[in-house]
Image (cartoon, rainbow, N blue to C red):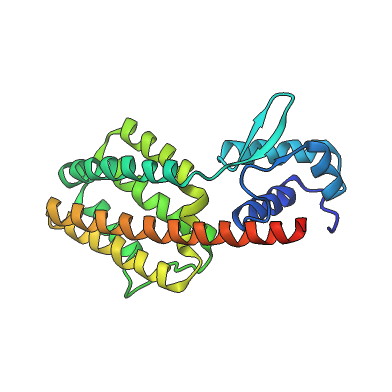
Length: 227
């Protein structure tokens, strides 16, 4: 691997390896091994690991080393179940308290006929998708709810990004986000909640299917290497 002295470069490389399952979930790796891999000292390695741990991609156990976050599909689906309940309440508050001006601005950002600031980058889309849901929660005025949703996002981020690796998922997100905003502008809570539930269900099923597929492919590759 080419030398990379920047902590940012190391962070980017490790994150991409985790997302693409090049580092298999649950794998233990030490700072020394990573320093050897990137041909750098432990200092930039440690900085990159701290960021990845904070974002939920890795866990660090004292005297044991670093572990790639283990993907437990059942646990992730439970996060989605809680998310649906929180999003439902978030819409209720937004429908009551979010101003027309704020909803119109958010709606314009996701208008599929305008595609303002359209991005085909999975990382950027994942970040923008999170920001959309957080904006609705903030518009409702309940900061505790907003923080709970942010924590849920952190826990499902590793698979949520997968939904934005193709144009179909990106196009669908623009359309569904715009529809939700339009329902809120009409103060039609029931329609907004139905659209949100459908939006999350599709994202959940796509992420789950693709994650299981990628895990199976990676496990098969690793088994072949062990032979």
